[in-house]
Every structure is written in structure tokens, then in C-alpha cells.
Length: 224
Image 1 (cartoon, rainbow, N blue to C red):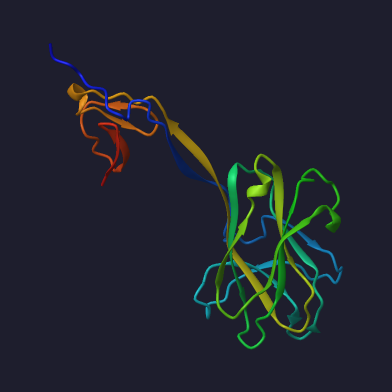
Image 2: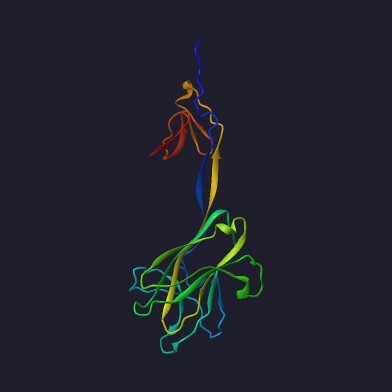
């Protein structure tokens, strides 16, 4: 009698992480789409601008610590995102730069609040996540937000504690999190060696044509 063998991968459990984009903003419109707060009350705030001399020639958000024909200012300007809910392993990334190479050290910080329904702005509602000074080159910054898994929050960029530099620029803001996709109890016998499964558990009776990660013969196989 022919015997059909179960492979050792018969109760296989596999977790695959998929990255989700929760929030993204590149400020390519004509007006700032986020809430802005001029906390120092000087009438100057975040705006949208474009500098064709820069390697980034698209619009970006900016705030001044010096204004031509006005002089030095002392900003406390907040750029606040819409509310969003985070899954596992959340992170925030963004690009930042000081406009003038000789006066690039603009002080800024990244904050988060869970008080997303507040009708009036209060700095006390916000918790600091990151603080730094910009440089003369575009930098891509990553901020860990894993502690806010399952929370609905807003993030804010604050330009403050600086005067008489020039301009800070922000662009390409993105918040991502991860979702685990699990496959369990995959059973393969020798007569089913041509059976394939994708990571959602869908069965294929021949090798899939689409690139991706699959299960065949109890093993993970990358199809290119």
C-alpha cells in the first residue's frame, strides 16, 4: 500500500508583517491642509513655499525665525496633523532642512497628543517625542510611535526656542504601522507537491505567476 507522508511542516505557523500607510502629507497644495497655531502670537505662522534653488523643488511647509524686511522673530509655531489611529510598531518619518546654509540650525520638536477632540489648543496636551536642530541638508528623520498602539492621536511639529536664523522646512511626512498576516496548519503530502498557498491561505494548483512569497511543500518560496 502506498503511504502518503506528512512533512514536518504540517502545523506550520508563519507571521508576515505588512506595512500600512496611516497618514501621509507632502504639502503640494496651495494652502496648509493641517491645523496651524501661532502660539507666540506674532502673526507669523507655518506656510507653504517652494525654493527652485533647492534639490527639492516641490512645495513644502515652512516657518521663519527671521523675515526679510522685518528682522528676527521668536516663533512658537505648531503644525498639527489630523487624528489617526495606530496599529502595531507605528513610526513617523519626515524630511527637514534649514533653508540658509549659513543659518540652518532651526530648533524644532515632534509631539503627540491623545486629546484629539480638544476644541482649543493647549501645549500641555502634547507630549514630546523628538527634539533637534535642522541642518543645511535635507535629513530624513524617523520617530518611534510603537507606544501608541491602538491609540487615536495627532502629531505636531513645533518650531520654537530659536531666533535670528532664517527658515525651517518640512516635507514628506508619513506615519506607518504593521499588520501581521498568519498562516497556520499547512499540510502537504507527496502527491500535492505542486500545490501552492499564498500568505492569505489561498490555494493554487500550479506555481503562481505573480511575484511574492508563497508556501510550497511546507516551505516558504519567493517567486520573482
